Length: 80
Image 1 (spheres, rainbow, N blue to C red):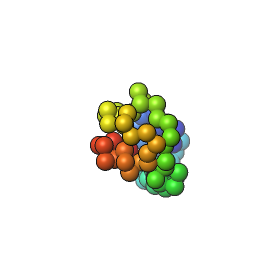
Image 2 (cartoon, one colour; image 1 turned 90 degrees about the vertical axis):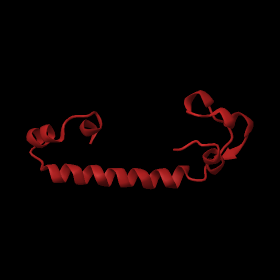
Image 3 (cartoon, one colour; image 1 turned 180 degrees about the horizontal axis):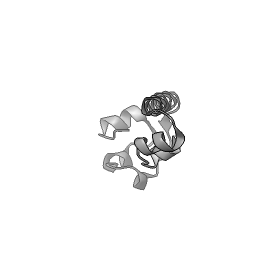
């Protein structure tokens, strides 16, 4: 998984580790689905009391929001 995340070609991984391409793609798909579940569980409706604004794109309207939740950030145009 780490090698795929680093951009190593699937065909190279298939050749070196003798794992079928379909298996690698299945693992990648399952990892993505699990990551989405974790994200929804921990970050959906998260109440933010402090945001380091220089780390977020399009944060002009967040300066005035103070404590806010992710839904409010979406109203300002911030997408996860």
